Amino acid sequence: MGEVPHSVPHSTQRGLPSPDLFTMKHLLTTSLVFIGILCSYTVLSIIPNTNTDVDRTARVAVVTGSNKGVGFATVKGLCQRFNGTVYLTARSVVRGQASVEELRKIGLQPRFHQLDITDDSSVNAFKTYLNDTHGGLDILVNNAGISFKENATELFSVQASETVRVNYFSLLKVSKALFPLLRPHARVVHVSSAFGRLPLIPGSQIRARFSNSELTVEGLNQIMRDFIEATKTNNYQDSGWPDKPYVVSKVGVSALTGIQQKALDTDAREDLVVNAVHPGYVNTDMTDHLGVFTPERGSQSSLYAALLPENTDIKGKYIWHDNTLVDWANGPKPAA
Image (spheres, rainbow, N blue to C red):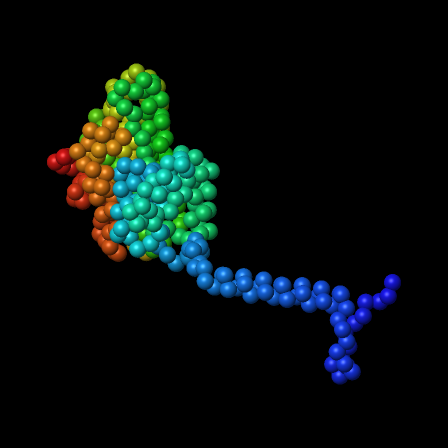
């Protein structure tokens, strides 16, 4: 076998010899590679960059449990009024993505991410995603929740445990996970209810525990656990508890709101605000579509609290469906 001929330096060339087969193949390969690079560059230059996930300066809003009802209407309202990225979240990927497509049909651009507020791994995965993608959070609307029907067949103790687990402890779980991501001037909204008022707790001693100005999150957690334990006997009402677990869960949210605001007031990040809101009696699955308000009307208080201006004095409050402030602990029930 002969050696592969080498090209001759230009200074010593005496003519233009006919290229051999190897050289022709080499030139052809080089040309094709160059053409490929040129074409790739041309294509990339005319296709817009649609990957906005890397934009860590954009403001970000999240609404939990938002594939339908008040949550869906809140996402819709934020897409229309909030200058930033809005996440619609749901336990079901299929239902959540269908809801996103519904909003896109009317020209809105929410994003979807799966989130089950009762599942630690789901909550932590969402936290990691938000942190890695956006580096922070500007609006959090804790909308997800449940309520058993009047004709529910589950044992009362089961209803109590599950209602408090979802409406209170899972909301607290999401708060603990996402509060570290809150940017200065962030707004947090806990969707409560007309049932989130302390006078609906019959027992005066229990009411005193809820309204104690020195109450901590752990102390509140213990109150909620005490209710669950009390329902395992038939004398829970004799102890001063109501016969509706939903009431206890939402009173817990009202109390938690004030405790969290106290902590946020001492945070180094400026102007962090959390409020609880009552959406009104809304026509949704939860009310068996007996409510008098549309979901859009029901989202009014959530949007109001989510879009409060910088350095607002409305913080740690309980906001009625018409955006008025109500004393959840001592005040009378406003007009429906």
